Image: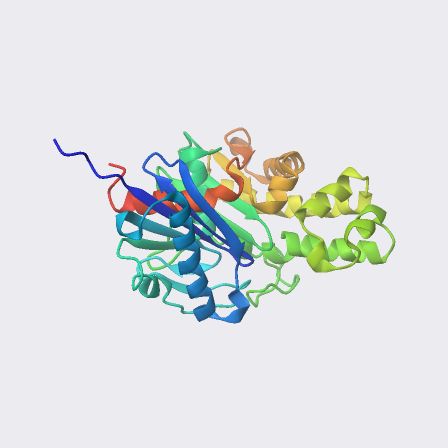
Length: 328
């Protein structure tokens, strides 16, 4: 009998600041991986060329020719039309109504699917990480913004025509801070890394956070998750309080999720949770537990993601594999 041809999958993580391409075999072992900065502010065309170049570089690293690809899955940091493969919007990148998949199909002759990056990350954790054996897995990924995703009985929850589960834009305070989406009081505007960094920069200005002052000063772009974690280790009490407040808001949003759909696990990912897993898992869990219906208090867990930067690419590639029927 002739040998069954080998199958290869590409998972692509298209974030606001970084993009990465992974090449997987059918067992989801990583054969090649390339990460670069996203040239998003240079416009879509420049970014499209970079995406194609990064995919080709990862394939070359893996020793795989494009003609043998079985599929490409792309996780994008924004709202997408999953059926048409269009980017609808992204508060943190600025693209609207971009036909990404249509353009990529001109260069790659295989199935290509687009999904939200956190949907992809939660699906990756569901299959390969901290969410395995969950019936319902909800994810909250805390980075520059806050993204959400949910996998129920093996399927990503999506709207009729687009990605959904935008927990970062759940309104927490009617007249709260202005969000990048244009609305006020969104969870993202109150608890994301950007919001935390802004509050931390003010504490530096006031002379309340000496360790953070030494590491990053008041430069908002320099106050990232690692710097915040180091600041807490160095006993900057005000920074710790700001982080706990952020986790408290996220816990409130998580409680709303529990009351609505009762996920057996809520997974925390993204740079902030990965830099301070114990702090965020503890604070989010207790904040959520205080606010859910009493009958639900012992029916959910809050866990931290295990796959790190690999989650979105793995989930995106696994999703295109699932949708093309190759997991059957």
